[in-house]
Structure formats: C-alpha cells, structure tokens
Length: 312
Length: 312
Image (cartoon, rainbow over all chains, first blue to last red; front, side, top):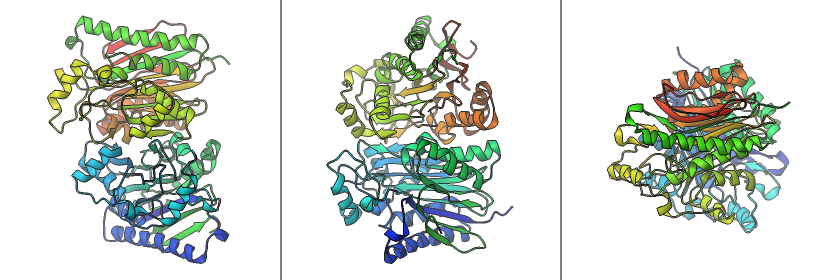
C-alpha cells in the first residue's frame, strides 16, 4: 500500500501578533519555513525515509538564525548556548536524544547519532559532546551562534533569576523550538525536534523537546509529534505520547487527539504552546493554544502552506 | 472519602535466581526492603502525604549499599558515580528530576528540590549540582560511594566499550534502580525513582528513571508508577504513562494495565524489567518479565510483604 506523503514543521509558538511584526520580518520567517518545507519534502518526493525528511527540515531551521535552535539559539544564564534535540522513527520506535550540550553545529545530527551509533537513547552534557567529537560532528565557536538581538535579550535579564522566553523584547512570550514530522511513501513516520531552550535558563535545565513522549514521539501505528511550548507543563502532561494514546486506546483521529490535548488538557495545567502531528494516512494537524505558531505543512497533491498567526 | 493506605517499593529487577544467592545475602536484601517499607508506611500511617512516604522509602534504599542508588551506586566509565532520580505527585502532577549528577548524597532529595524550589522539571549535569549546593544539600566524596564489589565489576569492563548491568559478576543481568509508590489517606498518589544507572555507562547516558512518563509518573486519576528495567526500551515505550493511558482511555484496572505493558508490549521491544504501581483505591501491582525483582508492598489491613524471586 502506498501512503500519501506529508510533512509538517514548526518554528516555535507564542504571543505572535501581526501588528507587532514588520512586513520584512514576516517575509523572512515565511521564507525560512518555506525553505525548510522544500528541503524536507524533496526527500519524501524522491522516495526517502520520513526520518531523513524530518531531519533535513530541522537542519534547515537549525541553520537559520531566525529560529531558536542551532545557529539561532538563545543565550543561557552563563552566556553560552545549550542545545536539546531528539529524533524518533515510528517504524522501529528507535529514538535518540541529547540535552544540555554546547558547540555542536547541528544538535539534531547528534540526536540521530545517539539513536544509530550507540546503545543509548539519551545523552546529556559535556560527555555527549565527547560522543559528537568521536564521530566527527562539526563544532562551532561562540561567534557562530552569536545573534545581537538574542544577546541583548539575555543582557537585560542575566543578572536576575528570571528565565525568559524567546523574543520577549516586546512583551511577547514565545516558546521557541523547531521541529518536523513526516510520513513517507511506505507509511513510515518520524519526528525531530531541536531547541536552544529559554533565555537565561540555568542549572542545566532541560525542557520537553528531548524527552521521548513529551516533546518528541513517533509510532507508525498512531502518529509522529513534535511539540513547542512551555516545556515544563508539556513534560508533566507527557504530551506527545498522550496524543498517540488517545488515538490507540480511544480511537480518536489525529485531529481529535491533538485538539483534545492542546485545547482541553494542557490549558488545565497552564500549558501554553502547540504541536505538529502527522499520521500514516498523510493527515496533518498543527494545533496551538496561544496567539500564533510559526508553522508549515505540505500534503501530497497540495501546495506547501506556511502560516504564522492564529487568524490565518 | 478515606482511601486505604498502600506502599510499594522496588530495588531493581533482573536474572535474580535463588540458587545463586547465599542465605546471608538474601537475608540482607530482605531486611533492606523491609526497612524501606517500614519507614515509608510509617509516614502514611501518621497521616503523611504519599510524596513524603515515597521519598522516605527511597531515601532508605539510597542509603543502603546493597541497592544501586545513592550510596550503593555502580561505577560509570570514568570511575565516578552518576545519579538519576525523579519524583512526581499525582495531586498537582508536579514533577522534579535530575540526571547525570555527581556527589549528591541523596539524589531523590534533589529531584524533589527541583520540583518544589525551581520553575523547572528537569536539571542535568554539573549545573544541577550547583542548584543542590545553593540549597545546602549534603554532598559526599568518592569514598562514601565506594563499594568493593561494584568497583571490581567496573574494573573488569572499564577498558571495553561495554556497558554492563549491575551485579553481573555471575552472569546475571540486573537492572538496578530503587523506587517507591504510595497512596495516602486522601487518595493522593506519588512516585519516586533513583538510580546509579549502568556500570561503565559513558557519554552522559540517561536512562528511564528520571524521565517523567517513562520510569516515573503519578496522576491521582490513574496510578503512580516507578519502573526498573533496561532503560532504553522503557524510554521508547514511555512505559509509565502508557500504563496510566491504558487505565484512563481503555478502562483497564491497575493489574490489567500493568500486565499489558510489562508482559505484552515491552517484550516486543526487547524490554526486560518490571515496575511497581499503586492506584487511589490502594491497589498495588508489581509485575516483571524477568527472573526476579527486589520488591515489597504494604496494603492497609495487611502485613508488609517482601519478595525477591519470580516463584514467590
């Protein structure tokens, strides 16, 4: 049986409002999302695996300084960048994840390396960086990850105990993460998520992105999920696995299950954010319970769709 | 409504066989489990919260050199001890977790501190140790954590890339973790898990114990769970949340849901181990799919029960 191709991506969610964004900034975000959709969908279109498609899309977003992952990551409390990332493939349900790592140019590659070249699912901290070096992954210095806007955001809060969300210079609360989910021709699903976390985060804080079942999950029998939101409620609610469980055990559709979690369950835990999801029938869902989410999707037979605001 | 008190604990699972254990060793293990049950149940009996009971039981097991957590932790690849721990309370669904930390005498206390004194759910690595110091948690040096048997186990494999399981000197494969789950008078549930991980683990490996939804989970509406097993399959299967989801969405009882996950779903992922579970009606379940599990339970109106082997 041939499955319809599908890809969905996100670049974070939060209080994203049209009147606060210049047309130029909006155009840059849309172009970045469109570019990620194009590279990811191209993998699917040439018969590639969902995992390769999801990884390709996330690599594009990691390399784009607009998004809080890889090159565009926010500053942690100590003035460095810390990355979390995870991948999961729905056919074998293998997974790989890294947290609180520094200097790795593309954290999503390291997450995949953990999945494919180690007996582990998760590695954290400086020793995970050793694993990256052992396998020859490219590292970058602080200058590569520097972004003046994010540096200024950090300078404003670094002497406080406050952890702020990305892009908060205009009173916005953004949960910045990037992610991709894909369904390939064989009906294999995959999810990939990468983030720089929250500005001024400290104490080795880890959010939901690299937690299998919370921010990232994939199972061919149900769905692939990549979440973006206030990480702590997403972890406590085990968001991604909860969507899959509602489909598996209660028979909900992808749209129903994702809506139930994002619009009904999470608000009760003060969980603000969204997620992207795909199932093996090529259906996609991109729900969020905040003002906006940088997002895009491309379903076979249709055109790539890129959206930012809640009223689109 | 008054709920019946219940407590369950574990001290790891694996190829634990009667003929391989001396009567003296067996007696020490049983005494250690009994002691943990006593301190945990005493908290419940005097009207304490399930979280305090679960923490008290785990503290007892962490301080006991027989179990792979706290004082009895195994050696990691670099000759130090790394701890993972998590707590979750089912009333508020707050959670706290730490991974890949060193030197903290009682990692379960640090997990609780993360839950109660930070805005985070999870902290990892040296910076999490800074958080422990900031709050005055006791640290210990290498001598405190030294155990000759575990040191010899590590010496035999340290120059290999092999990661071995605890107690493997006689060809046994043990997944050593400690944990406790409790139901208090008000029907509040809580779970606590702590581990030293696997002998010779490296690269900042994190297992299922500190992952909310995998090794540790609690929700008053369903159950509290602490798992012990080969961490990687447990993480990929999101074991603890899967039990809760089977109860919530498919209406299974605690016994049915835990059996489904441990005996039917996990073996398909080569997931060996077990878990302890309690619900708000004071029911307990302690299933495992390997030869034995160090375990104990105490339900109100009954006597404390301690078991080790699969045929008990």
